[in-house]
Image 1: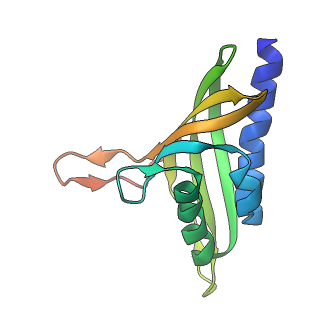
Image 2: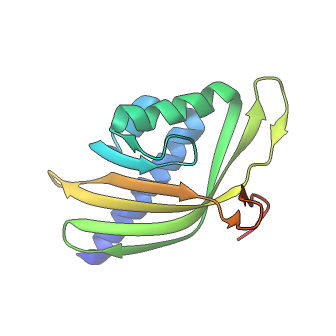
Length: 143
């Protein structure tokens, strides 16, 4: 059973990537719990609720003409109704002005709950390491 759940969760992450690349907010909405809490890279410190999470994606989609998202080193831990995973992710694409943005690698953590038989993201966190001396994020690291 756990292998089936893990496969389903990997597909879920794949659907998030597909939703991002299609800039499909409706598809993304179906992948998050209504009360998702997101610690995203954009202020404020937390985004509560699926509408707040999707607002971040809408901001990114308005910036990009074409967008892609790459996931590396996805690891999952699965229990009966709760699971978590972590990976590296990179958002990149072409802006509406035609500039190519290679993106930066971030650290991503997902927490899932099985709700009515469906896995949904109930928490996510995206971060970059920072240089303690300068207080600035370090965005040029590669996995």
